[in-house]
Length: 181
Image 1: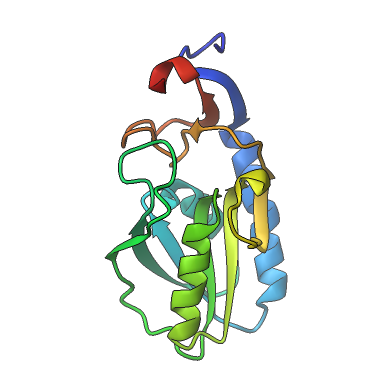
Image 2 (image 1 turned 180 degrees about the vertical axis):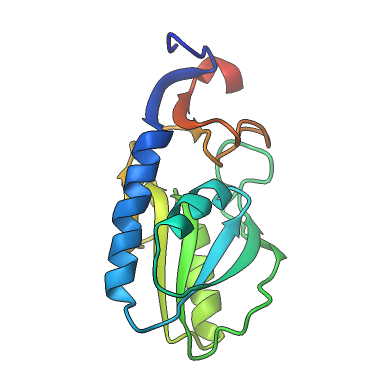
C-alpha cells in the first residue's frame, strides 16, 4: 500500500511527470509533422486526460476526433475481443493520423485501430501513448511516441479506470491486488 492511498500498492507517475512526458512528445510531434495538419484520434474514454495534456504541448495545427472501442468489457484483463462503440466523424483518407492512447497493453486495440484507419485510406498512422506495457503485448506492435514504459501490472488513474472509476485521479498507480482479487 502507498502511504497516501490504500487502493494502490505504489504510485508510478504523478501529474507533473505526465505533463513533462506530454511536453517531450508534443515537441516530437511538432518536429515530425512540421508543415502538416495531422488528425489526432483520441481513444475514449481513457486517453482524454492524456490527450488534454498532449494537445496543450503541440504547436502545429492539428485536427481532433474521437473513437470509442472496448476490449475489457468490465474486467481487469483484456477480453481479446475489440468492440467499436463510437466511430470517427472525420474522413481519414489521405491524411496523417496520430492515435492518442492511454495505454498499450496487449496491443490488440492498437492493432485493430491501425488496421481500421489504414483500410480507410490514411496516409500514415502513428500512435502517441501515455503508457506502454511492452511485456504485456500479445501481438507484435509498437507505439511511435511513448510517455512511459511500465511493467505488466494493473494500473489506474489519470484516465485509466478500475470498473469505470478512478479516471479522475491526478496520478497513475498500481492497483492494490486486494481490491480486485
